[in-house]
Length: 389
Image (cartoon, rainbow, N blue to C red; front, side):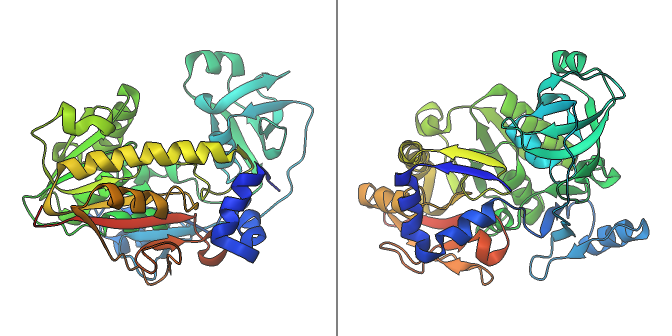
């Protein structure tokens, strides 16, 4: 199950972190965790009330043991999926969702072969891995042209989990799908009424929305992303949650916010930049080279340098990624501090996660390991600007 194609240098990079446990890590990436999490929008409802409402309809849902706003649904499987003569090929991200039981919508369709409305089909990845069986409910080519609407109603998939986006609670803005590690990012901020919080790579708005909820709307939030489509998507999500009035969402290349917005000063900054996403699971197929990791390391450093220019003395930057290499995580922070003497690190402590065991700042940062914590792979660091600078 799953196909990972990483070059020798990348595997050696991962071995620096995982040593003899590398095979356990790689195997765990091919499968989903046993829990699918959502964050309860506490501006609209209480977690207990949401759980009661779902259970009244026979939906199995559980409160997280530690985070009050986190609830989860169990992931069942794997199951067997048959390969039919008629297939629909899904793009990578859509195939991974369909493998968990989601229906396939037009934006996720890559190709259709010998398919018409009413046909029973197999949904496959680009390389032909079957992920689900279902029925075509709309002409595939018409749907692809319009880019909208349901194409395949899934009846059987590799795994089974609650279809979160089809729940009325989702439409009402009561929940936001978010991994457990990602929920710990906004919780590293020390939110005080009247402060300014900047989210530099904010779309689709998960952490931005969490800041609104944790602060009860009492902080000013400025959220950036580089494309109009991403910012539009973020605005839609914030509107669904009822948070749009608390957030200014702007289109900008966050690497240059200190130049484009020279007046901008933040008490706290979130930097969750593009990364190799090696911690994301399940991976039905993934191809990456070590040179991509090195390029992303340089890219991430640009975002953090911009954050260091806009954060106030005594303020902090929370840096997170959904990847697991040293190059993109600990080494990015080390390089940043070598170039920016006004910065220092603060401890990030999440009891259920592991402490970073690597580099100059051993035991300071937090890591989630898929094969250890049954979560995506994740990294969280906190960087402070000294009061004297």
